[in-house]
Image 1 (cartoon, each protein chain N blue to C red):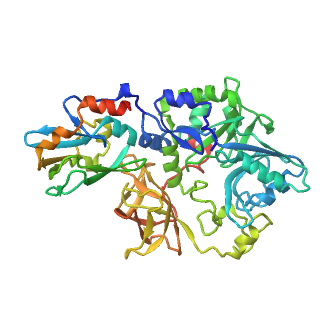
Image 2 (image 1 turned 30 degrees about the vertical axis):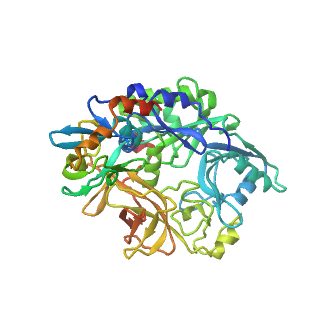
Image 3 (image 1 turned 90 degrees about the horizontal axis):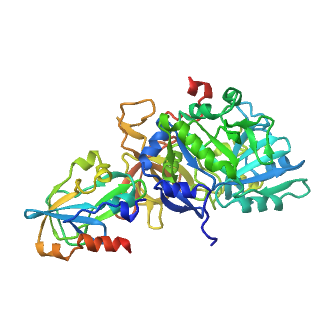
Length: 420
Length: 131
């Protein structure tokens, strides 16, 4: 195993009392002194910032860049934007997965079109090299340059309803930057990856600003030259301090994304076919839901539909959880083994009222105690509302199969509505 | 994470290798977890407590503390019968994070009060954490 890696903010995390742990071979903060619950709630009620520079950036450029990505990524770049499913354009990005020919997952990614022949692919910690190699191997006759920029691009996220208000204070021209900046669009650039519209902070730092994130809440991901990350981090935190912005660790990130029904790569998606799961939008299904709109690696295997297991979201009735583990299973009321636990965490912003899940978002008087939630991989299909039991052999926790978990999420809200 | 110098140790309590504390109150003992334990676990979100009247042997699991990170079993360091549980923790499990020494978890009537002397002193416990 490679030596443990550190992001450029490692010193800041330690100085600020973070409880550190290894994630993707990076020594990362789990939570700071405020604790994971306060951090999770800050993202629902104010905003939180996350050091995400452990994630990897791969640059894909050249005449054949789009053709290569079309073949390797599950999402159809010619047929992906909006209800009309129009083609990807400069300044827009999409979520997809890189599959092996057998339909199993190498990693998930967001692919950014900077210009018609310039793309940025953002993958998970430690995956830059493998994805770059995978792309090069499949380049064929395409004229394309693939470069793994791991460790050369800094990244931080700001997530939560106050995100735009915080950035408005420190962006040089917030009005222009925020104009028509819809969910899954971006502006600016970093290094050689540039769009036509620069995004600059008041201190002169130029960034790529993206209306994306991994919490289900309104916010931005910010790609920044690695040497400018530490100063940007401090500037954003200072600008947000009066609005209750907190630095957040990976524990809050995990509980927020689970409540938002977002998968963690290598945990909820991985070495099994990308099929029968809550993320069919990452595949290029035609309206018939039977055929695909393009050819891509993994297509044939997925069309055979010979994967008879189901990845399903669940939520419990209180905060108790049972972690994924070799001895932990999903069972029926009668004790029959149904499958395994992929993710089980506590979304601290939600609770139940008369059986229904309620969030503290928009319910200021609601005292959430938290609900366990996550994903299970079951051997047969279950419907929303069905109950199964998580068990570690000793403890048993009843949970409900869901289509969605945390209500009143803000990710898709317009910037104008969040600034109003 | 708290440095050793930041951790709170309470004089007069006895401690265990599992990071619990025990204090004598008349002929009963109150049991809780140490500042180190709550700091390691992070935010505690759920506490599972035994029924009053239950008897446990030394070393038996009597409940769990559920934090954002994991589920931690609680082991009884001294054999005895549960005479009270801290009901405040049901509604406010975070009390343990806020003050792990005031917010005891269970109270027992020990079968053999002599077992208390086998537990760690504050100096022993400090030494254990120093590693």
